[in-house]
Length: 223
Image (tube, rainbow, N blue to C red):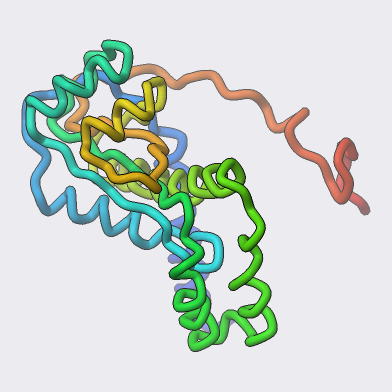
């Protein structure tokens, strides 16, 4: 292996270790210092969300950045009186566009130009949602927006911030308080700030029982 290639592999390995360290160190932070989150960090988190993958490159999400104490206080009731939405210096509500179908053809055209899709695949992708009802479209909106929200959440922790995904709430009330028009789904609101606590790791189930190989229920990989 050439030195250049060795350096490349070594660099990739180091980045992988850093990423998994980040995942292991991440906690849901519910207590924050009063220090405001700088605009530069807010923009980096939003950029992380913008870069998220989505079905057919539709990018069906919208972020609402909330700093106003009055808006946060109004959110307090909608999230069943969880004080973290008032105490966090920053909230980012993650919204999913329920029906992205009008913009899908232009997004898939970009995938064709990038060499990701053939025209045949583009034609299928342009129409895959045609017969979906409101419930199915909302589920897909939740999925896509949650991916973008997860990017924002992990970016927050990478930037030294604490973050908690707040989904125990009355979604319709959150949408109303934020003046969101019809056609959007509230995937969750991220409470963000410099950590005011250092909680222990939360328990996680082992991989055993949640992984199958080749067919559901097959516990061992094929040899």
